[in-house]
Amino acid sequence: MLKEPSFSIGIEEEYLLVDKETGNLIREAPPSMLPECQEVLAEQVTPEFFQSQIEVGTRVCHTIAEARDELKRLRSGVSSVAAKHGLAIIAASTHPFSSTQSQKHTNKDRYAILARDMQAVARRMVISGMHVHVGIEDADLRIDMMDQTSYILPHLLALSTSSPFWEGDNTGLKSYRIAVWNELPRTGLPERFSSFADYQRHVNVLVDAGVIEDSSKVWWDIRPSMRFPTLEMRIPDICTRLEDGICLAALYRCWLRMLYRLRVNNQRWRTYANLLLNENRWRAQRYGFEQGLIDYGQGQVVPYARLLDELLGYINEDAEFFGCIDEVTHARTILGQGTSAHWQLQTYHEAITSGASHDEALKAVVDMLIEETMRGIE
Image 1 (cartoon, rainbow, N blue to C red):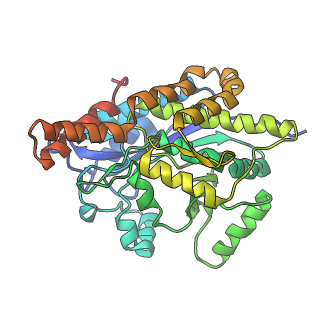
Image 2: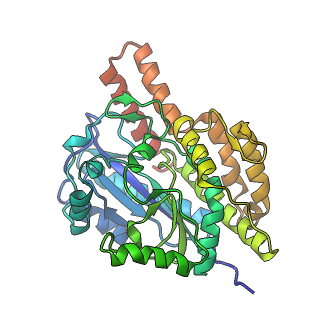
């Protein structure tokens, strides 16, 4: 019998570094900043493609409470170091107004190769996300669960949106980050494979052809991690409020355990063509949760709140098992209070209504993001 996975959890978050006074995205990080962060957080903080970005990763956690404490410590640690340099972090997937053309990438071979190979596409990658790893030790089970989890990826994206602005423009999308990310190759929903060996054979075609170095260059919305025995979910925008991110991580973890329970009973979640799944992915990218998603069984668009209730019903047993009922039901709170994208747009329009200029209103959005990123942490 298949051994039950550990369902351990790890979360990675990518922050943008801004000048605290002007709200501008920095171009170059102070040379001492990363070493100072690493003095506090060791290997749990790393550089990202651009110097205006910084990434943190939790240790392997066994409860959602552990993951929350880890993220609090990581956000607090990076924020404290940034403050010494007159900077602040924002947990948002795009900066509201800074230009991508002024950015400078980190001096690292991997990033130099990416910049060379991707050209203008790479120069637009001033975006941040959140990745959630869940321990699934059996490699074939990771592939099987990846296939079945594609169904709910749009549902999770809709709860996370934090990128409505791009270079000072209201894009009309709740997650413009996804539009930028889609420009890279090997992104989007994953392919389907019969086994881990089947997956590896396909990746090896690209490796042997010299197109990619390894599977870490496969940037799907969900993928088997190359470094860890985990299934890594990568579709969400980064959540500005920590509790929203914890909710998404808990939902994803519970979904995977629900799939395992089905497997034990010789059942599985129905899979759908990417043609259909991509339509919901687009709706989540464009509207967030506001305009609903397609219920494939009914063949019609259904209000998101109804879909969420169904999802919470499916995973209730698993949320009880993990002791995270409050965390997963926080999704209903997100529906009531909106995502970061909603708050950004509201902050902007309120500032304009109060007489602010376009630039002043965008600066107000950054100020709000700085505050909300540290809500409940300091």
